[in-house]
Amino acid sequence: MKRAVEHRIGVQAPAEIVWEVVSEFERWHEWNPLYVKAAGQLKIGTALTLEEAIGDRPVKVIQPVVQDWVPFEQLHWRSQRLGGFVTAIRYLEVENMGPESATFSNGELFMGFLVKWISKDERRALKSAFTAMGEAVRDRAEALWQARAVAPSEVG
Image 1: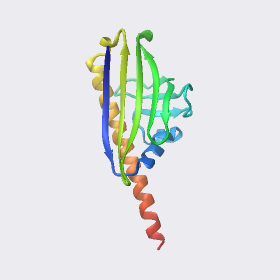
Image 2 (image 1 turned 90 degrees about the vertical axis):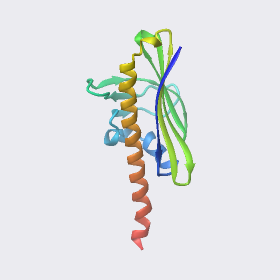
Image 3 (image 1 turned 45 degrees about the vertical axis):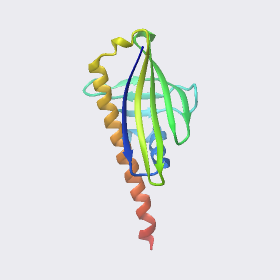
Image 4 (image 1 turned 90 degrees about the horizontal axis):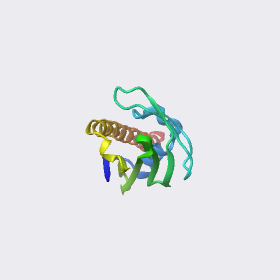
């Protein structure tokens, strides 16, 4: 059995800028409402350390393992829930839509014996958190792109 929660958003900035925002863990605390602190490296099989803030719940430290990553396109990590009976694959994906636009998707796919125990309330809270993160990625990438696009013309 599988369940998924996802949020997708258009970004008016190049995919490379969106990837820069997503891949710089050391800066996540500056803009990310879901992962208020992040550390680790983009290397398959390594653990990340993330401080996760979902809704009004206490901040929780999680240590998922990088499962897959493709530069400028995707980052996937894996964690276990419900005593290991549910595997969660978290994904952050960037799709190039043209020279100055991209789509950012972030979501989680749940698989395993106890997937039915991932409640609607839990999925609703995750959807809200993923939406907030998606909007924050968009806002940061668009601000970086605007700042970089304006700077050269100001030099004049």
